[in-house]
Image (cartoon, rainbow, N blue to C red; front, side, top):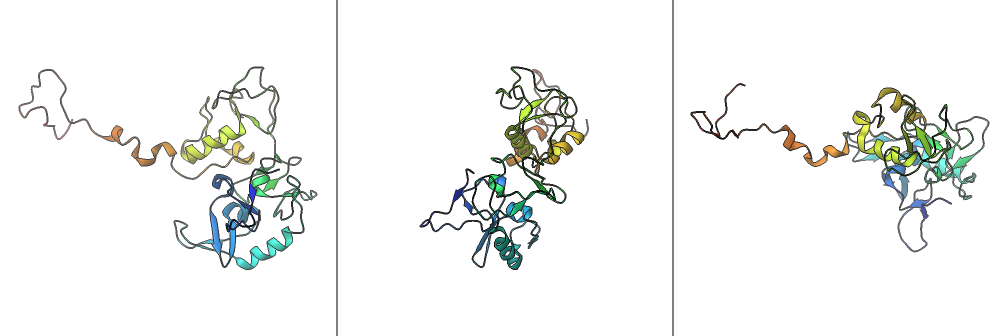
Length: 249
């Protein structure tokens, strides 16, 4: 079962019409939009292939395609999520011969892959893209991010850098790093490769945010950009005193 919770009968809190969940992680489902009595998650819309328009550059307002959402809900109510067993599964596997559907919050539990780039495809556990790892991790190999064991087999939850092939990590750990680092700083923890590493991670369903790295929030490194303006030598020879600086040099 998915960890997302269905709307409680008397809670008064609206559930997303596409996944039926409340209290979901916004990192998984994105922002929550509401219009004309319809509540829906940003990424539930995206992976149900429903386009919407941002009303402002910052996304403060959104124009929801209500008619398209209602049609998608009607269609999804005829499909059962292969992960949790409940109806209303609006996301279908991109493999043309596959009939599996699922809710976005159920994707991780069902070992599905949702690609947050390009056409935004989704795949079930059977048809998802997989890494072509030449060898499984050695015994006692730890995740480079959480330092916990990754196991001795290649799996959905265990990933490796495609460049150096030595950096092993858990899917959840590298996903957290991708959200924190953003497109500017996301790279392999060992070989520091950015291009090939990021490309393969997006194919495997890792969401890389297009934002500055989180460690730059609130001017955390502002002090490093300040110029030192005080002479610290024991005997300052500048005629103007320790607080005076040259215009150049």
